[in-house]
Length: 159
Image 1 (cartoon, rainbow, N blue to C red):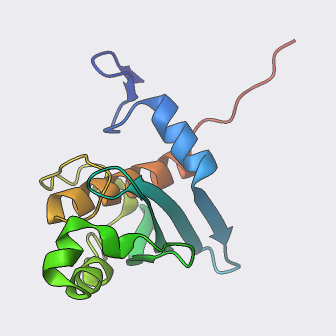
Image 2: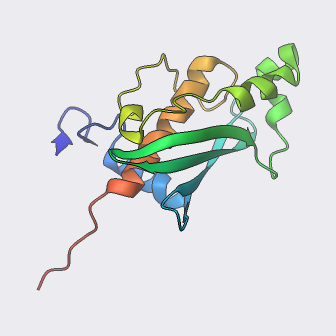
């Protein structure tokens, strides 16, 4: 079902086109033999003034449960290819503590992936990760993209 007000599938905070692009271009799923899934979302954004590219990897471990998947762990770290994180405005004020905060900010661990769809944290949709609201927005993108990838309808072929 599609929400006509923002072209988002019911339950999602983002349009189908964005969810499809994010899940296809930035998300890697690695199913395990025990039914768990290791997921990595390769985030690419910009520093606060938009002049440099940021690269962070969001890693999520999903454990199978009776009602879907439990978010067993969730971390965000600078990608190996990132050399611009220290150009974020908040880094100039807080230094490496900013990266520590980003790495230890693990929302929704212990919740189901379904519960992540209704997470109502304060958000700000800019491209950097300086403030908590911006990091919340990125986590929302990650969890919604992950859910979408695992639950989207496969296209059917017609005659």
